[in-house]
Amino acid sequence: MFEHFYYEAIRKTVIAFGTLFNNIYIKHKNKSGKVVSTLKVPFAYGPTQKFLARLEQSPDLNKKIQITTPRISMEIVGLTYDASRKSSTMRGFLTKDSTGPKKSYLPVPYNVNFELSIFTKLEDDMFQIVEQIIPYFQPQYAITITAVEEIQEKRDIIFTLDNITMTDNYEGNFDDRRALIWTLKFTAKTYIFLPVSSDSTENSIINRVTIGFVAGDVSDTVTNDIDISVTPKAVRNYTGTVVTTLSSDALVEDRFITVSDSSNLNVKTLIEINGEILYVEAIDQNKIQVIRGLYETKSQLQVAGSDVLNITTIDNNLIPVNDILGFVSIFE
Image: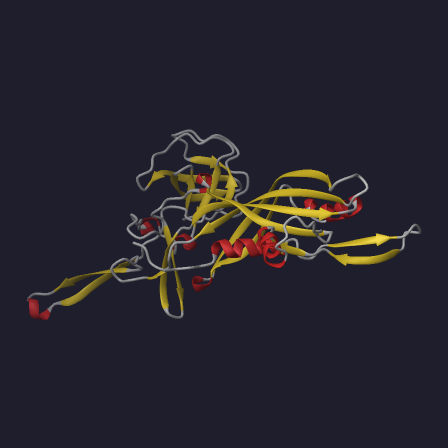
C-alpha cells in the first residue's frame, strides 16, 4: 500500500503563498509630499526560526532585543481535510508522456491555514502594507501551480482571507518603543496527490474494440466478411465544467429543455444535469430536444438554474479504471 513518493504539495503551497507578499514597499514623504525614502519590507518564514536563533546567539534570555521594523513573517498554523471538496476515491485520470501512459487517482483536498504577521513602528507604515494586500482578496485569490511535474498536472490553489486582528504593544512605559502587530489569517485550498503509476495493460481503459464476422463453407477457407469497430466513450462528466444552466423547469416527461445559453452545446452529444444523462438531438436557439435518462440514469424533475455539464472527448481520457463504459455509437 505505502510507497515512497513526494510531489511537494505542501511545500509548493507555502511557496505560492509566500510569493504574494515578497514584493511590498513602503514610502516615506516629507511635509511637502516628496518621497524621501523607499523601503522594501523584509519577508521571512517564522517566527520559530527567530526564537531558535536567539537561543543560539544570546543565551541571556533576560536581555531585551528589538525586531527591525517594518517586517512581515508567515507560518503554517493548521492542516485539515476538506470534506466539502471530496470526490470519489476511485475516480482517476490517464495522461501520456514520452515514456507512455500514466495513471493517477484524483487528489485529496486539504486546507492549509496560514498566519501572516506584519510588524511596524509607525501606523502609516502598517496602512501602506495592508492596502497593498487586502484589495486582491475579495475574499479569494487564486494561483495556478504545477502540482505534479511528472504528468504536468496543473491546479488552481485558492487563498481566502479569513480575518484580521490588530494589537498595539508597548514595552515598558509609553515612552518606550512601540510595536504595531497585525495578523492576517488565510486558508489555502490545496490538493495532495496519490502516487502516479505507469498504466498497465491489465488495468488500462480499452481504447478500441474490433469484432470480425466471418463466412465460408469450410473452416480452412474462412474469409472475413465484415469488421465492426467500436470506441468506448465517457457517459459521465469528469471535468466538472459547467457550460450553461437551465432557464426553466424540465418535467420528467419533457423532451425539450430550455437553457440560458446553447452556444457551447452541440447535437449528437451527451450532457449531464444533476446526475441524469441526456442525449442532444437538436438545438433551436436555446431550446434543446433531448433523449432523457440514459445509461442507467432516470429522467427526473430538473429545476431552473440547474447546472448543465458537457460530456466531451476530454472526459474520454478521464474515465476511471473499472468504470462502466458507454458505447454511444448507436446515436451516430
